[in-house]
Amino acid sequence: MRMTLNIMTWRRREMVRWLVSCATEIGPQALMNIMQNWYSLFTPVEAATIVAVTGTTHATLLRLQLDTPRREELWACARTLALQCAMKDPQNCALPALTLCEKNHSAFEAAYQIVLDAAAGGLGHAHLFTVARYMEHRGLPLRAYKLATLALAQLSIAFNQDSHPAVNDVLWACSLSHSLGRHELSAIVPLIIRSIHCAPMLSDILRRWTLSAPGLGPLGARRAAKPLGADRAPLCQLLDAAVTAYITTSHSRLTHISPRHYGDFIEFLGKARETFLLAPDGHLQFAQFLENLKQTYKGKKKLMLLVRERFG
Image 1 (cartoon, rainbow, N blue to C red):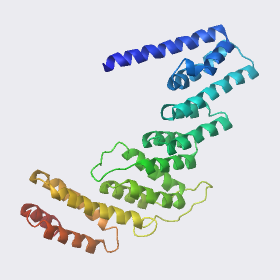
Image 2 (image 1 turned 90 degrees about the horizontal axis):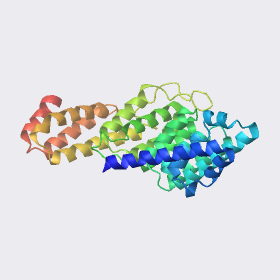
Image 3 (image 1 turned 120 degrees about the horizontal axis):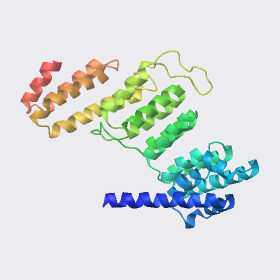
Image 4 (image 1 turned 60 degrees about the horizontal axis):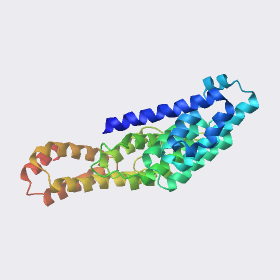
């Protein structure tokens, strides 16, 4: 069934390309006509990714042999089409529209605004992260940061989702905020805490942010001379969240743990200790945490024996 659907999609796309080719053979007016009436002929994805793109390639423009005003008219038609498609189907057409509108400031701004509006209307975090990475690649880090924060606001990674598909996007967003400076990093910390409940992820982000000072800000002036301390603002909130996540996750895992997972749990506690120790009183906190585990789960004698052997 899936293979049949793929074949049908391929044939449909080939038909669209053929129609664009025919219009090109007839002349620029025919090509602009199908662009202006795309909604009656194509889906938004077909129009944005095939019609607009194919109709403005270097090969097509050479074939049409247009003068500068006529060429710009064709480009304007294609940009209008792309923006209409992005409004109709932002999930699949926003990025193609941005790409097509790169060389025209007003059209590019319009496409960017469509993405922002779509974020409020339910454009998913995966698509927002994709556009955010595109913005960074285009040399627009502040816009990339804005889109990344919108994506994070929609995201929720549970305590047991270490391999969530968005992990790499989250780490990229954290790296971006750190490179922009302390202000951007401070603003993203609450979003991370609200969106990420996975203890290893939180501790990983925390350690990455403490390795070096926040980088160059958008105006090129260094905003911090030394690395941030995990026990000081703005990272102290993240440290508290990571410690809390380790405690909560430990109790959750111990509720239904089987002997074959004891080894994994001991390793998990080892990672937890590393995070606890980032706090000034981390030794004391971790000792109290272990004591609580020993009292609460004293019935799991073999596991508690392993805890004592590893941590005392």
